[in-house]
Image 1: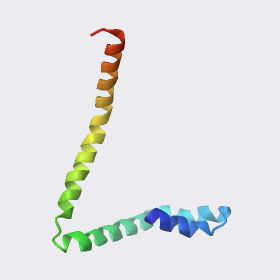
Image 2: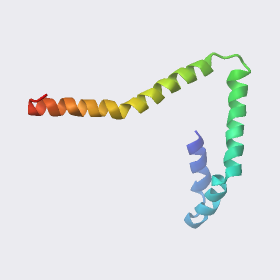
Image 3: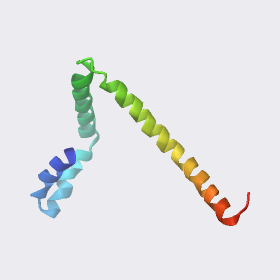
Length: 90
């Protein structure tokens, strides 16, 4: 949704005007303001309403994180198994 809004905002700009439009968005103050705004919105939407949804966010976020951390080791293991099958070794 945010990407669509961003695209709609820059769609009307000329190419030479795009860097000048994007550069202020990459400042520390702008990012800090947007993160604070997002956290306030999250607090109002889920925390203040006593929703169980934040628990789901933590569980699924932890699941995704652990999967991404274990992925390189799992890929090495699968590559070793494939190599073992192809060469008939140990």
